[in-house]
Image (tube, rainbow, N blue to C red; front, side):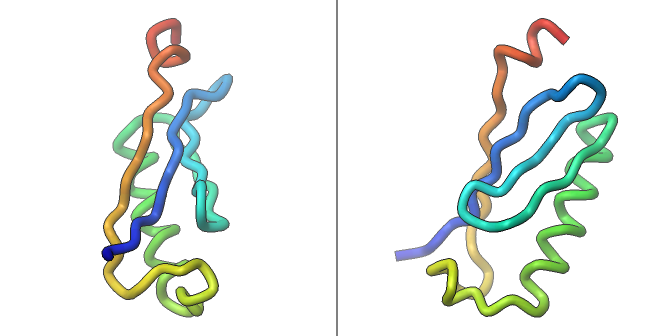
Length: 75
């Protein structure tokens, strides 16, 4: 079975925030583009030196991101 990295994305007061559900990653950005670029960099750095077996994840995992739409509709 392929393991996944789960990311929750929501709108804070000033920034979009991406927070790992099953990995210790948090990043932010003023726009979606900035957020996803920061998330890509954070994941790269995390995967680079981390022992993924601690998180029950293998090399080249799938990434699933959940968006919290209720806050986005009223932003």
